[in-house]
Length: 390
Image (cartoon, rainbow, N blue to C red; front, top):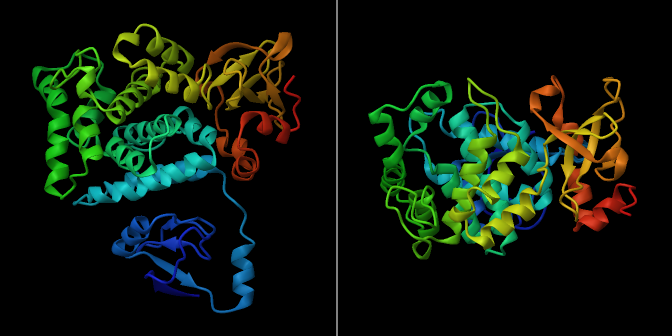
């Protein structure tokens, strides 16, 4: 196979890619079978100087077609790594966040549960970038739930990805700092949205939704936010979604000196103690998308099993769980599926993610793409997994 630079004409929109797309270093950017859905995304890939391996005979074509599918959970994890690599060079081109945002949208559409599970279970990479990426995933889920147009969502997700570029170094310091902020740190924290907007505008980024969410992602509808203490009437739904995603992801994330707060407690806190800072419409979308037990939450069941929430179902208090450990503490080889209800499988308590060590979380969602395509709603998903919803 020979490397060929991607150009218009090599790809048909809304048709599966017949090859992997790679960058100049050979890193896979988009996998075989991925659907490029917009001309804008294709234009950005061509501008980035992406390549593919030209298939020169039928044997090679069959070899490519025989590649197994990759779970959405793993693809989201890989995309988080790709996002991190954008910041590895001396000059960061923030416009590339838009391409990452489009890929986040596609993966959330394929399997939102697997995408959300990354927030709880993927702890690799630089915290400051991981946090923004996870907030971007939740932003997409919230705005999609509210029926926002794809293009507007895309720029809001890009905003979530770049909201903290004005304080990345400070975020890394605070990740390890277990003492009160200094006066200089407080100033930097308050002004970082405005610094980020300036950095984006310097690179020609001026889309209203993108700039708006970066500038306003710390504002609150009750006027208690910063840097401008804006009120509800001055805040877009997009900026409110990013604000909520930012707060949630910050609380469930660990720090060097403490574990993350359990996700069900964070969700409860946001919908009760923080209710005055959250629009009821946004709170409803958050409850629907995150649920009582978000995907990726480790739980102890009433029968003593330990498992992971893998699917939100119609009853958000009774999600689907894959059990990892038996009541005797022995790891299962074949991971049984449980609907968390009744006296046997009801959730007894949530657990910290590090209770289970050295586990390949991606296997929990191996067939996620096929199931999602075949099962567009929760009731069908239950039936597809061979579980009686009654």
